[in-house]
Length: 98
Image (cartoon, rainbow, N blue to C red; front, side):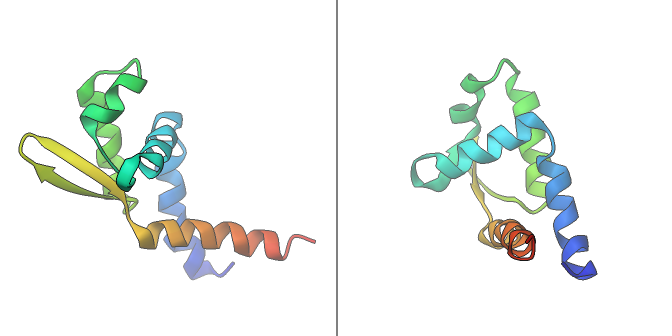
């Protein structure tokens, strides 16, 4: 892995290093249509809606999620470029592992 790749991917890894944020990413990615509203995600956690929104904001600011406001709700979906960077990280490290 190059230094440039490491610099680009490290903030993404830092953002998902929290168990709640990791679960949120998984839930958004697996949700129907690849997008989810805060109202869809909150019931899965023993956390308040503002806390879930805070975690989603961190994922958005890290560049992992796009968001779109529709009425009073905000819908999130994974950014394809961020997902490619994450997948590239794992394929690069496993390719030279032997």
